[in-house]
Image 1 (spheres, rainbow, N blue to C red):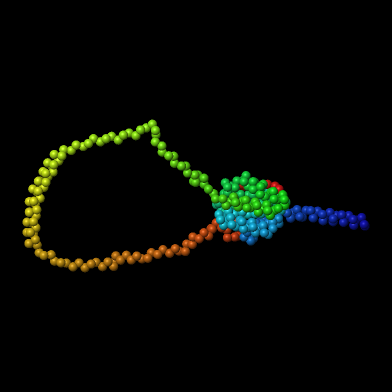
Image 2 (cartoon, one colour):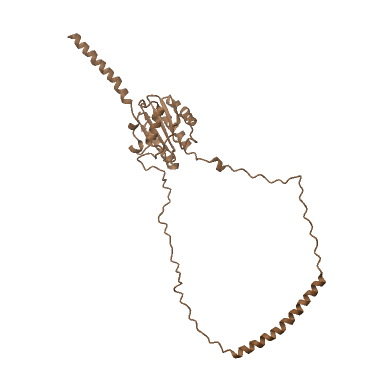
Length: 306
């Protein structure tokens, strides 16, 4: 009887030990759909599922990211999870979560996901397809290796997360500059060729006028004009006096002025009201809460262990 009781104790002890080991591991498993979306939960940017960040750190992270998003519409999500084992790799989990939430603005794809897997001691940065020119994969890996993992190795998860996020903010707030449109080639100075001499302007030959013939023509024209104008003047006066005697005196007609009321084009005060088109910079790109902007990722970014 004593032996059977011992066997039962051994069996129950074994089951308890197995449960203590198996169930915590199982509880670490989390799918992409189970990660709380911070935009939907409390309109923030941080989800600390692994519980490795302090409240003050989350406040600072949310403030930094909100300022960035208000400035140029870029979005950063900071997520910590205990494990990513349901996915094949931490990278696959990060890419799937990024696209599931739609981090970044739609059409701009200017989002970044900073994911920390505490159980796998892994950090992943996923970048939107629209910002890979200013945040290429090599730069993302550099931020992880220089700003995040050195602090994580010292168990400074608050400091590493803050430093990594600040580095991302600094990159994303850099304006996109089109080098081609900004670069203008200076105009080359025009240097005259030394071997070619300017051709001299040919001197014009003087025009010799016959002053004598010109004077004779002028005098002939004057005499001819007098012979025509003087008789014509007398004939004109004779005919005018004859007609003025026979014609009756003109009656003075009164022309009543036309009423110009029909043509009264009143300046009908075409006051164009500004129709309250408040062009206040209401930052249409800014999220009003509830979700991210609908961006997507093509798989860019990088990762590193600590």
